[in-house]
Image: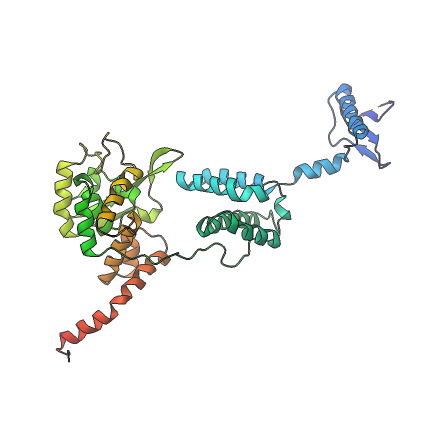
Length: 374
C-alpha cells in the first residue's frame, strides 16, 4: 500500500514497516536508508528532506551516509588512545599526558578533521616543516613519532593502504650538546653541598644510576644492606598536577642493583637518621612525610651545582655518570642494560662508547704489566 502525498512517497511493506522516497533536485528517486516503524516517522523524514531542498543545503541521503562513515584522523587517534589504555600493558600516566599534549598542540590542529585516508606524504612534510616555527627539535621529533605510530597502527588494521609518515629522520633528534659526566671530585663536592637528608640520594642516583622517580619512591623494604642490594620496583611521577606511584618505566626497570660497598655505610646512616619509619617508610621523604617533589629536590640541587662550579649538572647527568663509571669497569652491554634498567641495547651502547676513551690508559696499563714503559 502506497500513500500519495504532495512531496515524496510512503509505502507500507509486507513487514508492516514504512518506506519513504522522493524525487530529488537531481531528478533521481532517493529512498531513506532505513525503514520506519510508523507512517508519521516517514512523514517527518520527508519533511526534513524537503526543508533541506528549500534551504539549498540538500545532499543525497546515500552521500550523507558515506560521508558520515568516513573516519577522521582525530576520531582514529582518540580510538587509538582508548585501545592503548585498555591494552595488557596500558600507557603510563605521564606518557598518556604527553601524548594528549602532543596531539592537542601540534597534530590535531592540522589533521584532526581530515579523513584518515586523505593525508598524504606531502601533507606530512609540509606540517613537519611548519613545526620548526612552533617548537624545538625534541617536541618536533616526538610529535612526528606519535603521528607515525598512529598511522602504523592504521596501516596494520587496513584502515589505510600505506602510512604517509615517511619523512626520513623526522622521528629522531640529535643531542644538542655533549654530556660531561661528573668527576669523582664533583660527586663528593656536590653531595657535601646538599642538605644532609638529601646527600645519600645524590650519591645513590650517581653510583647506582637511578632515575629521580625511582630514587624518590625507594622505601626501607627496598634496601638490603646485608647483601648490598637495592631493589627497584616502582617509580613516582607527577602527572596532571598530582604525584602518582606506578611501575617502573619499563619491565627492565624492575631490577636489583648491587650497591658499591663504599656507599653502604652512608646509606645505613641515612636510613637510621632520615628515612620514614616502617618497612614502607620512604628513604627520602619530604618535610610532610610524603614523596619528595622533583621541584623541591631541584631547588637544593641547583644551589649545590652552582657552588661547585658545575652549572651543567642535572639529575640525569648523575645517572649518566653512574652509567659511564659502570662502563669503565669493563661491564658488558648486557650487564649495563641490567644495571640501568634498559630494555633495548641502543641506550646502553652510548655508555660503552663513552668508556672507549680509556683505551690509551688501558694500553699503558698493559705495558706496565710487563715493565714495558720506555
